[in-house]
Length: 168
Image (cartoon, rainbow, N blue to C red; front, side):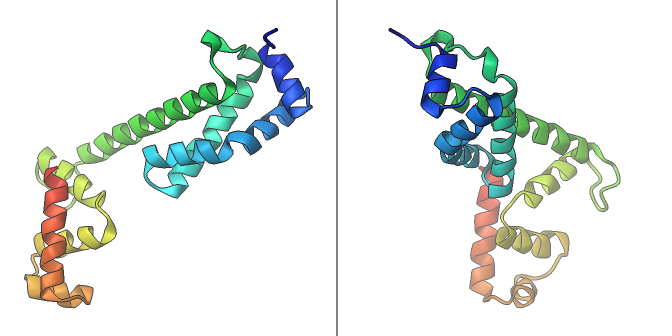
């Protein structure tokens, strides 16, 4: 005999209240959800926000889940997590596009310049610094290296890596 979602939730967790069931689901799947969110969001704070939003959505829809399409609770929660991450990434992209449209960027005359600057700002710190010093501040490679406290060859490697990241 196949148990319904509510029966399995109650027997697996021993709770009937949605908040208690959610706590049980979080204990069971929280790490998996956080791991999945991290893969999409690429940093821990955003992944934690996405995981929290995922469990909020799960809690709000807990009673409506009845093993849709014969899926398990885990697959349902992971699908909610994936969709939450994709929604957050789309929102971030829209916000980024709006920021790129902002004409107040100093030194960025065209839309393409603003978009490039947004891409540069998304680089990891050590690569972003090399690009900003050499191309934005118009420092020589030697000056940028000295400012960053690294060798000239290290600054050159960082700059080349940053440029390849921007191209790809």
